[in-house]
Length: 108
Image (cartoon, rainbow, N blue to C red; front, side):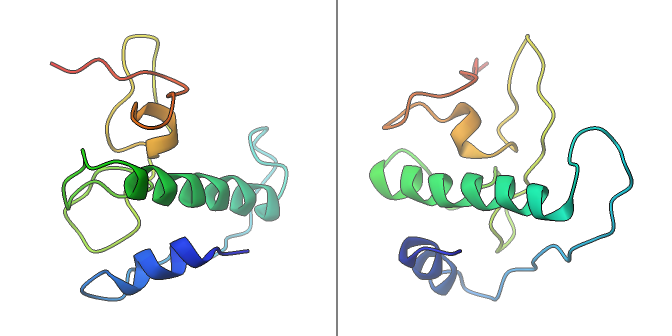
């Protein structure tokens, strides 16, 4: 399920973004299925686009799934610690305006 906001965001990129291809997952205890992984990524993408559109604080390298200089939806790292949340994780995890972040990012 993609929203109009996501479709418009993709259309605004200078080039077509590379999209991750579905893979066969082994029982790793994190994602029980590829559909579960896709659902999580999809929701982070939808919310990330909403965050970008609702705030004027982001530059062109800030993407819905995290900071990157490439024409894409973002890096999408899923690694964070109690010390900090890197900016290449999905915006829903750390972006603070207009959204209350799940893991507030400490800037240097």
